[in-house]
Image (cartoon, rainbow, N blue to C red; front, side, top):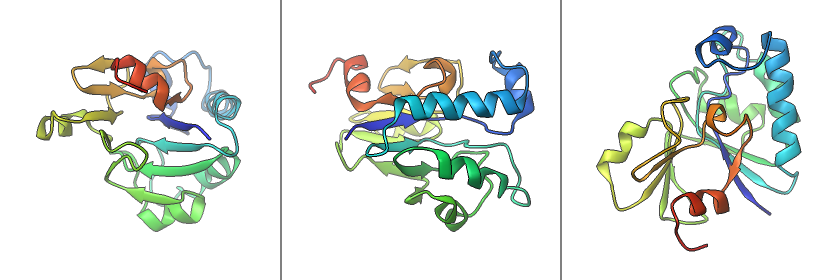
Length: 169
């Protein structure tokens, strides 16, 4: 079993293609490729932490996301981002095991999961796994951005993150 992280998929967000210079011609194409890249990377027995901004859908049409969530491999845990407009149980009903605003990683308490890297200023004794900033940075001080825009549209695993910080495995 491998522990994975990803962020800022922005399913159904047409403008993110332009804003982040994503190599897709339409939302349909982007959604298809993000799902495909994810499932080629994450196994059914793995766990993936989604560090926010799953989709750009308001609460009235959030149900569109449900089919995609059901197709994603592995155990899924969501850290809410600024564009995640549903209530926590809405996401649980779609297939997330649990939903949080932030979380100390149960598998290794040296890591904190939080969508917005600005939160990292409260504790510089830990490593922060974040999203939100798209292409602004990949790694900065004690933060690593796991957004799809800097990791070739695929999740990254805990061992890769430890390697990025040059810490023991």
